[in-house]
Image 1 (cartoon, helix red, strand yellow):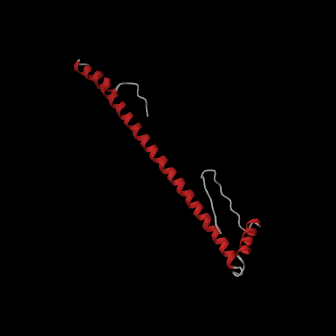
Image 2: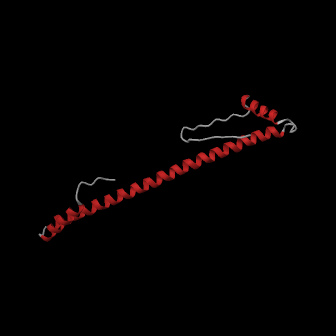
Image 3: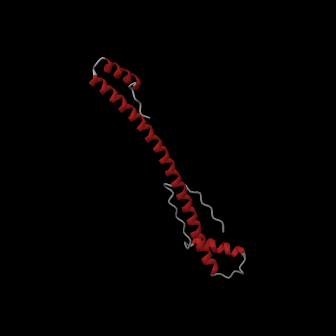
Length: 127
């Protein structure tokens, strides 16, 4: 918040005194200055509220972008694994399938790279 050193109410009273003492131009200037200070104070408060709202919106977008990225990454990995598993003999024991997926990851057939410099992600994948 802007820290206004002047007492706006005192300026209004001072303007009224000048106007009463027939110092019209000075009174008008003081009253205008008090009005300007009120407007600036109110505008600064409005800007602070807008900044808080925008910060919350940005955080929400970052959060949802992170969730979308995780979901898309999981779908991509699932598609790659499913594609490879579809080409296999499904009569294989589950352990052989796990070994195959493990070897796909080790051989670089499945590569996952996540740049989390601006988004904090928590990934989990179950096969």
